[in-house]
Image (cartoon, rainbow over all chains, first blue to last red):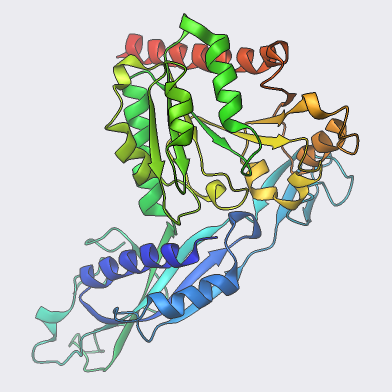
Amino acid sequence: MHELAMCQGLLSEVARLARVHGATAVTRLSVQIGPLSGVEASQLSCAFGIARIGTLAETAKLDIQVMSVGVWCEACAAETEVAPNALLCGDCGDWHVTLRSGNELLLKSVDLALETVTPAQGASTIPSWGGHHV
Amino acid sequence: MCNQCGCAVGTGTVEVLDAQGVLSARSPTVASVEVLTHLLHQNDRDAAHNRAHFDRHGVVAINLMSSPGSGKTSLLEATIDAIGDNCRIAVIEGDLATENDAQRIRARGVPAVQIITGQTCHLDAQMVHGALHALDLDAVDLLFIENVGNLVCPAGFDLGQHANVTLLSVAEGDDKPAKYPVIFRAADLVLLSKVDLLNVLDDFSPDQARRHVRELASDAPVLEVSARLPASLTRWLDWLEQRLNSSRAAVEHTESAS
């Protein structure tokens, strides 16, 4: 589709997170993609390799989890895995189904490298994470 | 939850304190931060802004999508002629090059803004926002956004529209919904266009096209229209009127509640 533009948007969001957390680098990005999102994992991976150059995520690994298309049938209540262009209940064949998964386009998590911590000066350099206060 | 950006701090976050409560010296320190944002969140934010803009001005915005040449502009011309003075229309046109479509619309006496996308294969919310500045939204009831002719990319970008209409001309083949499921699944209404050609294109079956749309778990109405047959537009015009009426009712409801 337009994976390069999407990667640039993704990287600007990641840069913002890195800045907020005082990270020196981004080591991993984890994304979820469904076939009905219109984005191809291989294209995204390729575009990411280009878009990350010169950013904090230059050496980051991109983990792409490709989701399956799952539907819930309103007629027989079965949950089945189906093809993206045939959203019919896998049990009874009815088209009155609700999509349970398959349209994801989600940045799930990022791994951030934080500045080196030492006992003497660590307290002032660590970002204040909720739940980790002394 | 992180108190700086609001994200959830996920598993894998390093403990920065040792057993004595002293900050440990570990290098490098890696924190895993759970984010859960849509990859197109910047566009989604711009689209929400556009939608709020439309709602404030009482404008119903319809995003028209299809492959190139399926008759979007011809349908708009015929729709403008049919609606006449009953409702104030404006059009945003998206094309890689030329002002041709906007000129055709203006020739019908309707304001039109042409977005020339260069090599970009779809409209996004930011482009539409730029075009809105060239329109007086207080003088518009119904805004058509004619997307770039393309059955792939336009489906991925919310523009702030209230409804998506996907056209499928009978010259294209009735299995297009099975081949391009994302854009047809996004449709609130599917229009089978150029149906005046059905008598010479007898390999296109409207029923088959309808079946393929249903196989995307979509209950969107599938209507047959031809810009050359004004009588064929009745149900399309009724659908538009319903959209306008329900939008006005929603605005009145909001106003009476506030």
